[in-house]
Image 1: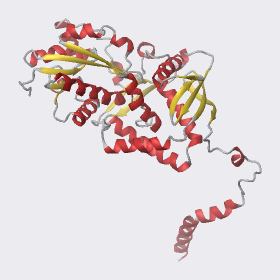
Image 2 (image 1 turned 180 degrees about the vertical axis):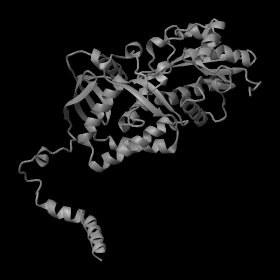
Image 3 (image 1 turned 60 degrees about the vertical axis):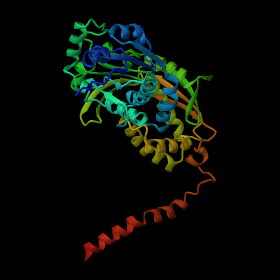
Image 4 (image 1 turned 120 degrees about the vertical axis):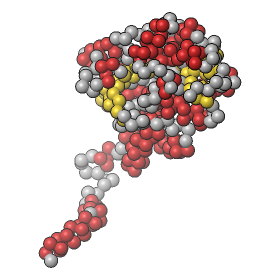
Length: 408
């Protein structure tokens, strides 16, 4: 089960319960091997406080803390935003988008350190084990992968806490606050404990970190403006800024207005259903604004086709199939659709709701004259009669056939 020739292991380290326990466990089970912790900074903020000291104290020989936020936002989040990708029409893929870039960083450091194996702390029931390992296989097919949750004697998070206490591993959680969380610049997820039963209402006042519930949001609406260029958000309230900076600002704005809280039961890649609460305030605002702009900039056929593609693209991302020809081809198509998605969107945010307060674009396909209920020179309403006769011909022919059969 465990290979004896493994002496140096690169570990995807978060500082959470799983990976903190994994360091001493690896050293115990692989002949006191060297464990190199790799922390990918994708926007965890305060979760990274003291993480270097914690990793070393837990038994790591070395730790890398790599800031990959900009690449994460530009190369992974932005394509998903342009696609309008939502898994099962709700989940904005916060964890799924982060795993591939973290795995690429693991491979990079494993090659640099000439490591014998790469280790992750994903459970054998989850999606992330697939996402990590598919990217590792794509970038380093010869790599040995260690997944402790699939082979060790610890069977629950309670077992992990006991193990940590026995090995004097510092933890920021207790048995009562032992939610499984994943945080990055795009989202924060909460799973486990009372959330494992869909019958339980989430304890929002206890678990929310990025914002407040709608009822606790301000009684006054807040208006914001977002400018897009070719599908990418480039200005917030008239100020040029990177998408990363804008996302950080929108997380604050959306959070305080109760935006982007989702209680979701989803179908995991491995087959089971799971329940979690997701906070995606800034991402939800960006998605909504982008959808509004597309509504006036994309023609009917492209929009309808893209809606179907968004679902397929979300499934590819959710299932960890980032480095595939199909995903890359989808991204190429999506990029082409964004050529004219340029303009300004004004939104009204109020107690968890977002509404449009105006959409403008030089590429708008919306013709006020043509759409008007009044008379215009662009549309002859009499033409509709011939169109309907031709469009409805198959329906009429079928109806006549059925009527004739009844008469016979």
